[in-house]
Length: 399
Image (cartoon, rainbow, N blue to C red; front, side, top):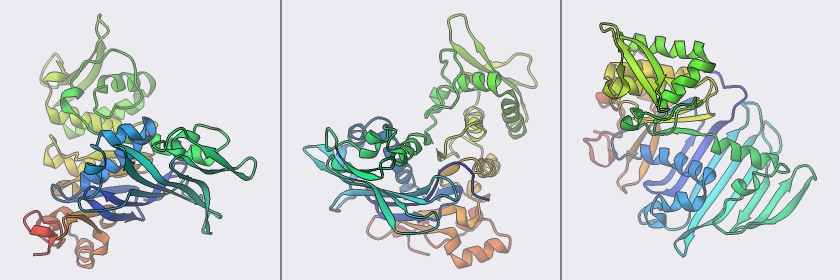
């Protein structure tokens, strides 16, 4: 698929010392990137890296740190040194490469920003990286693009992120751009019980992390984007033929009820009585057909509560959405993998040391030859042709 115009694109992510991710790198990321592998292979930990950075930027680093039980639970077992992240991205496909590096340690039970750097290449195509921001423990320099000079800055605490703090100032536009990028990520952790909730009425543009405002999103789409909502209902109806309509209704007490009607019956039923799979598929479709989607959209294990035969089409819907967002999906479903191309799928597995390793399906020559001959990745996985990540083989060794 061609690169998306106008939205940031992650080109590379490196993670060091984060739980089972002792040292993993994802490069040349495609618009749709799928992390595949058995339970405990590290897929959700990669997803949590995105969640950790997003939380650290939208709330604060201390909250994200404490919420994961601090360094003793965050740093890889038996490892030393800081937890490190390196993120390379472009504001647009043709713009210069931007690099963000973050190294975190702990002192007195709280996080300390050991090193934080923002760099960009001096030319869009290549060139030597230039420091835009360089900080350690709350002290450092940032490039003032308007004045053309580096300015010394001091933050109030060593546990503050310089990009998050200084990115709120208009005189540092490149820093602000990174802050907007990370705070704008959307990561889905759908909770089917919360999806069934009856929120207070009021249109809301985007589905919440847990999906508890699904009725509000349906209300918003009906009022502001009826054509998009009609498309969502059309897709949902083709996936679940017995479903006739979906509507949101405001009650006298201000609550918003979501009702779904099956074709054989005259009256619709409340969402709390509808199947888990139907509600979850509807929620995912509101994300994939969002009129103004986030630049990065993450979905964890979409196969839960969905019939396996729905997953191939859902994967293709995710690829279509990747034309407007960069999609990150974790899964261990071969049915979802059947719809994928080798360069979209990364296999995660644990080696003899217990740490996670990665392998891109397109780097396994035998595998790509079989796909070229008509094989599907999910079927090849089930038949053992990946050679790694088999949950029945210890330490990820080939059969």
